[in-house]
Image (cartoon, rainbow, N blue to C red):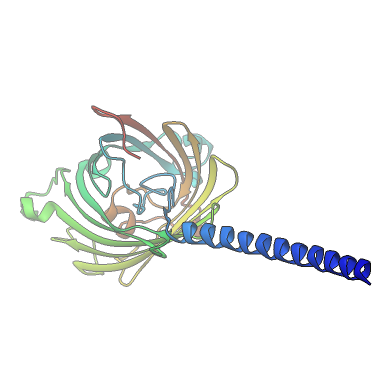
Length: 303
C-alpha cells in the first residue's frame, strides 16, 4: 500500500513538473513576442526613394536633393522623329537645359537653370512638408510644394509689341502628393497653377491656367525603372496638346541616366505643360535624355 502510494505521488509530481515547465515555456514565448511587438510598434520607418530623382522626366517629384549636395543636371530634347532620315529622325537638332539644384536642408532645395529654347532662365524653390512613414507615426503619403518662375529672354523683332520685363515673366505653383506602395511602384499627383503675365503669340487659353499631373514609376530591377508622366489642362492654348512622356531611369552610383520619348520640347514648368505643340498621334514624338550627377559640397552628405 505504501509502495503504491509512493508510486502514485511520484507520477503526480512528474505530471505537475511537466505541466508547470510547459506553462512557463509558453509564457516566456508570449512575453518575448509581446516585447518584440512593442519594440516594432515604437519604431518609425521613413520611406526612402519614392522616385530615383527630383524629376521623373520633366516633372518635379516629391524628392529633395540631400542637404549639402548639388545636383548638376543636363536635359536634352531632339526634334520630332517624323522629320525622317534627312534630319536623322530629329537627331540633327537639339534643345538643352543646364541646371544646378542645391539641397539647403533635409526638406528644402532650390534650383536654377537655363534653356536654349526661347533663351529662358528659370529658378525654383521646393519644400517637403510631409514624409511618408510607418510605425508609431503612420503617414500614408509624401507631400511637397513647389514655387517656380521663369524669364523668357528671346528678342522680338517687332518693336510694336512693346514687350516689357514683366511681360517675359511666368510663375508656377505646384502641390505634389506621392505614395510609394512597395519597393516597385510609386505614384504621384500634381495639381498645378501657372500664371502668364502676357501671352504674346499664344491665342486662346487664359493668363491663369490650371492643370493636374499624373506620375508613375515601376521598378523592373534594382537600378532600372520605367516612368510615365501626363498632364491634363483645364484650358489649352490654340494648337497645343497635353504633354505625355514615357522613359527609363538607370541609376549608377552618383549618376542617374534618364532616357525618354515625349511630345514636348519644353523643359521648365510653364513650357512643357502649356506649350506642347506636338501630338503623339501625328508622330510628333521627340527622343531625349537627362543626366543627373550629385556632388557633395563641403562636408559629409546627410542621408
